[in-house]
Amino acid sequence: MPHPVIVWFRQDLRLNDNPAFAAAIRSKAPIVPVFIDDTNYGRSAGKISLWWRNKSLAALADDLKTRGLKLIYREGNGLETMRALVTETDAATVFWNRQYEKDTIARDTELKSWLKDNNRQGEGHVGNLFFDPWQIMNKKSGSHFKVFSPFWKACLEAGLPCDLSAPPARIAGPEKSPEGLPLPAANTPPAPDMETLWQPGERGALKMLDVFFDEALEGYADNRDIPGGVTTSRLSPHLRWGEISPQRIFASLGEARLDTRDGRKFLSEVGWREFSYYLLYHYPDMPKRCLQNKFEAFPWRDAPEDLEAWKQGQTGYPIVDAGMRELARTGFMHNRSRMIAASFLTKHLLIDWREGEKWFWECLADADPANNVAGWQWTAGCGADAAPYFRIFNPIIQGQKFDPDGIYTKTYAPELAELTGKMIFAPWEASPETLSDAGIALDVDYPAPIVKHELARARALDVFHAL
Ligand SMILES: Cc1cc2nc3c(=O)[nH]c(=O)nc-3n(C[C@H](O)[C@H](O)[C@H](O)COP(=O)(O)OP(=O)(O)OC[C@H]3O[C@@H](n4cnc5c(N)ncnc54)[C@H](O)[C@@H]3O)c2cc1C
Image (cartoon, rainbow, N blue to C red; front, side):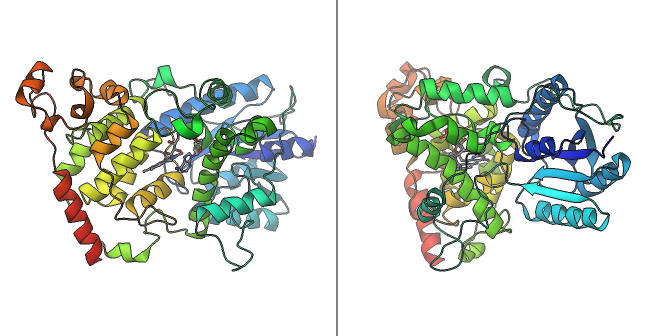
């Protein structure tokens, strides 16, 4: 029997279009599939994302089982656990798809050199992006791109790769599998609507893509900013855990769809994800530090009560509160709502974007090491290619513009159901009669605003100009 090989699954919980898994199959050696809950490298998943991951692991284990393979699950220091597994199984090669956080890169580099020193091999692949971040460089400056549009243009000019693969029906495993721990359970969804909305795992991801193509791709370029209804793909948690690859999305779009404005816009959003990882690689301290250095001196407010009101969807600004409550109920928040909520925290409340990022990390099913930080820095105005700080969203106008009938807002703030027009987004401006007819007593049924928009805006601009 030849030496087995190990496939180390991490952020790529799928069997199709998985370059590391495909390379292991090509080696024709018996395969040991492994997942390690790494306690030392990479950021530990938050509560909601962990539920998703555990569901996804169960789906992956089932898919492997039908092909004759057993997923080995272990917990501990990723590097040491993998070294022990290699020794135990006498594996010749370890295959993985690359991760791009600073410490995960260091871990993989160390593993690779240890494998080499021990006459074995480590083989990293690009599995969750179109390109490794060092492949796309600005030819004129010789440096990396700092702005999205030329970056994405360079990606398209390089030609997005499209290497799809499907595993065979039966795959040989080792004569004797190493011991693993039982897979962690994911019984009770930590947010009430999660179970009905989502199907974690590769099959769920492919289904979600089909639903999007059938129901929302047409009109996507115009509708994607509307948070009510199905206007976007909701693929982000699936992409976060690698249940579907960007290459599969690109291939499924196909030429006909890419010939349309909607198709191109959708692909360019997947490009923003690529850009986030690109930034994370080129600015490894980005999870902690503002990309624009001057923002490190920003006098953020220490305001625990305001922060708590924001987290609980009790700011008194209905469109902000609806977003935060959508998050609590579903483990997801529409992109427009994320921008409004993040802008409110960093500009109206002057609270450090890192506080918001931490909360999103805990509460989002798609909480992503690159996208979350990039999204926060972009909205706060301190990131690369960011919205300028002085562009401060008016939460009333944002509501009127993107949720004109209040469908989304009323779904998550049902206490406002009887209000109409602008009053849905500014209930404090309604007359006492209107409020009473709508059954609302401010600060009893729904909070009064925790800060006045005009004052907050002026305060934020003052601080920014001083900076
Ligand atoms: C403050 C803030 C925090 C965010 N945190 C995360 C996060 O933790 N995880 C995450 O995946 N996205 C994050 N985003 C980006 C974006 O909001 C989500 O990717 C998007 O809402 C997911 O919905 P969708 O899959 O329906 O998107 P679609 O519109 O269908 O887009 C398709 C895919 O493109 C990618 N994408 C879309 N918009 C963006 C964007 N602005 N930046 C990067 N990639 C994008 C996602 O992978 C998404 O699944 C954040 C944005 C902001 C403003």
